[in-house]
Image 1 (cartoon, rainbow, N blue to C red):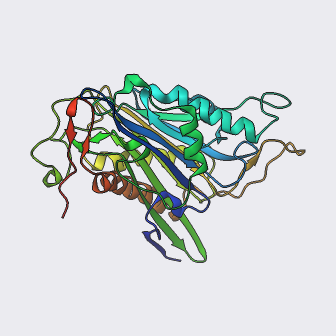
Image 2 (cartoon, rainbow, N blue to C red):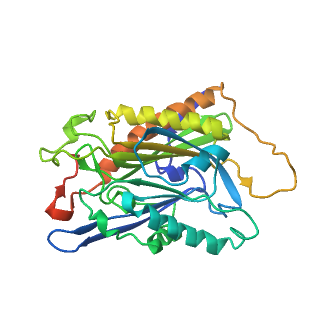
Image 3 (tube, rainbow, N blue to C red):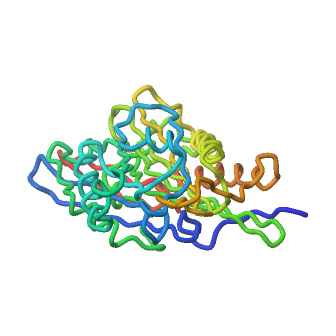
Length: 332
């Protein structure tokens, strides 16, 4: 039985059924020196109650120069019980608070008659364009990003990607997907990136760069989220997350000392109930040595690489603090 692989219908992470994405973008010139140029992005793993119906998940830290919250428990227990929230470095606390407020309102038992809650928040440093010290992101923005999530979402300089820079040009939010057909079975793997990394001389497609790129900046970061509807457990999802690093490397990055390169992967094929009577869980899982798994590896690599380029393709020239301008890449 042969395997066919192709791009998903939307060519985005939301080709994985149930996955949605929401943004809140903040863009305001305060004065000649300061500008708010940032935002929040929420990736929802399914449309139900994330705490009561957890999704299998894992993370892979390619380079740990990052300030994420919640990764330790995800790797320890192998489940995701909240949206994946993205923002700038100094707004992790506000987004954590806003997501907490939202989920506590939805789940009165949390912290009372049942366990506490693990929230997952990732970040990149947008201080070249954004007056990050103002901490303009508020908890209500996190809740708004969750409430407005949908299958159709903007890419480029939006949400958490508003102030991000990639390979010396405007970066931000990008996504892509691949679908694997095997007989009557069909599985999709989608990649979502927040790009804020790389030097202009590293990019594999240098003809996409304008002449005027920012002066040398501190090393940046990237957050990659992989979603799939293939039936995988947390160990297998970590293997999938590692392949995303190969797709990232294809674009040219050297993964610098100060770059926080963090990958999170989850599956929507099944959920794990917060509580159940039986002490056992019966799962249908894909075999590691099956050719479908190899195709998913390839799909993650390809979609991650393309998602990085999509973040550049969709971004627009942006003016930020100190009058700094970061241009869009050169696309025909």
